[in-house]
View (cartoon, rainbow, N blue to C red):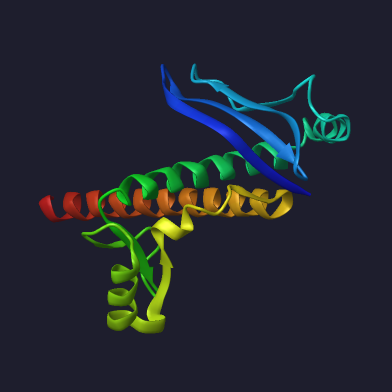
Length: 180
C-alpha cells in the first residue's frame, strides 16, 4: 500500500514540532496527520470528506503502529528535502558514492547545465545524487518499507546513544582510577 503526504506544514511548538499534513493512501486522500506540539504523539485520523475506500483503509490502520511510523518517516524525509531545497537556493548540494550518511558536498552556484558538466568532468560516475534533483521526487513510499526503515533508524540511534553512554562511563572510570 502506497502512502504519501501532501500539504505538509511544520513549525516549532511548546514541546516539539507542530505538524499538519494530508495523508494519501494509494493516491487517494484518506486523512490528516496532526501533532499539536504540546508533548503528545502524532495522530493520524481519517477525514470525513475523503475518498470512501481510502477512508476505510485508514480507519483499519489507525491502531497499527506501522502507520504512525511510516508517516513519521515521511515527515523526516519531507523535512530533509526542505533543508536541501534551502541549500539549493544558492548552492548545488551533491553526494558521492562512499560519502558518510548525512554528509553533503556543495558547489557554490545554483544547479544548471554548467554545474552538471563540472560535476560530471570532476567526479564522473562517482556522483550518487544531486540535491536539487532529489527534491523534485514526491514524499511517498510503501507503508511496510517506511515503517521498517523508521524502526531500523530508531534502533540504530538508540544503539549509538547506548554506545556513547558506555564509552563516557568507561572514560569516567578510567579517570577515577588514575586519580586514585
